[in-house]
Amino acid sequence: MFLKTHRRAKNGKEHCYYSIAENKRTTRGVVQRQVLYLGEINDSQREAWKRAIRVFDEGANSERAVAVYSSATALPAHAEGYGVRVCLEAMELHRPRQWGACWLGAELWNQLDMDGFWRPRLGCSREGTDWTKVLQVLSLYRLLDPGSEWRLHRDWFESTALADLLHGDFSLAAKDTLYRCHDHLLSHKEDFFSHLSDKWRDLFNPDYEVLLYDLTSTYFESTPDFPEGDKRRFGYSRDKRSDCMQIVIALVLTTEGFPLAYKVLPGNTLDNQTLRDFLADIEKQYGKAKRLWLMDRGIPTEEVLAEMRASDPPASYLVGTPKGRLTKYEARLLKENWQQAREGVDVKLLTDEGETYVLARSQDRVHKERSMRRRRLKRYLKALKKLRLERKLPLTRDDLLKALGGAAKAAGRDAKHIVITLPPEGTAVTPESFHYRIDRTRLRQTRHREGRYLLRTNLTSTDPAQLWERYLQLVRVEEAFRNLKGDLGIRPIYHQLENRVEAHVFISFIAFALHATLQARLRDLAPGLTPRAALEKMATLQMIDVKFPTSDGRTLTLPRHTQPNNDVQLLLDRLHLTLPDQPRPRLSAAQKIAV
Image (cartoon, rainbow, N blue to C red; front, side, top):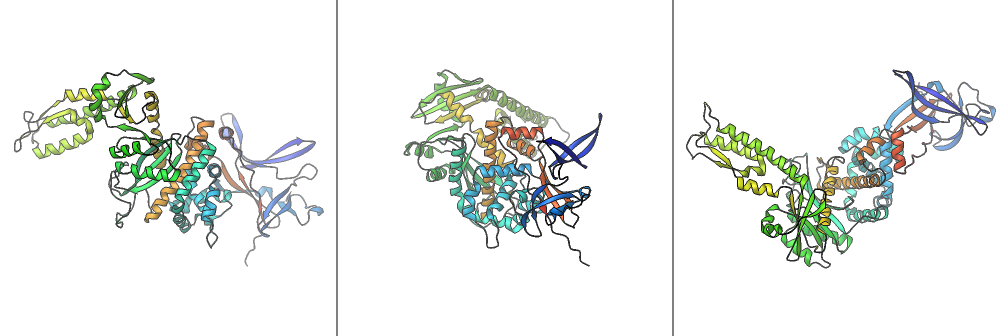
């Protein structure tokens, strides 16, 4: 790499600019690539190499004006006291660190006025720890490159420019400080929900009358030896980690994907035990209103739905219904005509006892479910055929039952389509005593119901096509859970104290709020680009310290972020963002050498 000079005449004067460049060999010869643009670091043609800048003098611990000269040029008499001679040929580059994604995360933090909410509540410790900045570090870490707090302390913080952006130092990532910050958060959770709701309204004006509700679980990498009443319990794991203790997280979103509230529940909580309390919490938090709740089947019970219909004002709902309920209404639905909701999706409408049932048929879903069923049945039949083959050493009946159990588990619900005849107890397993057949009546009924959904609502005057479109918005919740577990790395949880476990979920929720803000901006201004892709693009912007030794033994340090390439600049333009000015230079004190 080398220092490259650019001269430009402007307003009758010649200006000199510098950049750091490197030679790259290509098939067309040597090409120069600009690595870092430094700007004008010297004066005009009249006073060569001089440029008046403000630097932070670390020796005096204050800012002052200095004039910069090349060490090859004598210091003019008029510059005595404020002139600095730098050795350009001894320039060094130090501490390359990720800057762009951190800056974008800080911009999202400011858009949601996080400092305005947290600073009056968290304040500073007696030792001077700024808890708001520590929380910002934890939240941006969860947004950009999630991992454990120990990894943040040991590796990540020093590899980023967060200290520069937050005007702090490594004390923000001290190990004990990161953990202690968790202890200050939970008492402000409900107030933060209200703050977020107000900011969503100001920024995006989302629809608060239609809310999405669903649950997920996340597990722990810790010893399962917790006190009675702890929320970490064994239960049904959506992460396929039934060997680990877990907690259940209930989440409510708007249809645009903005999170409004969440709740941490014991790991053994059943889905149908959560809705009543959460409805009360939302009413307490945001007041009474006519809301439409979208939920998957298995969450509401008949008692809770009756309470929703009887509430004042009545709460509306649109929920999925188990396919088994089709049997009750199948004969009546056959008389109704199909209406096209959209291409490939047809719906039927049926009213019964103050409720509306919508039967939806999706051709894409029919093909998908039929393909999955055929694949599972094919594997199941192949396993059964293998078990019927004659062997030199015949299977015992117990071995057969074990093998059948494994094959049936792999086939899942489709195992019910095969009727198996087992050999009597105490007899050998032969092709004559063990055989099977396809239950064609049940298979025909399953084929008839593939790709069909029965929806249930207490809205009686709504177009069925609109109800189907509403129900499809539940994918927002599934997407939110994927982001929490994927992009934001909420799992696994390593904390040992229960209050810090809940604080970890709270920090993940804050990071998800930043993620949702970026997603909404991209949806409006740069559609098709995901938040993760945008952050990865911005992460290509680095910050580096450019150091010039001076003739008097000090060091002039210019922290500089790299210039965006074309695709990053296009993203910035689409998001209506402008990069900040370069940080002010620093002039270090002269080094004293002990003899």
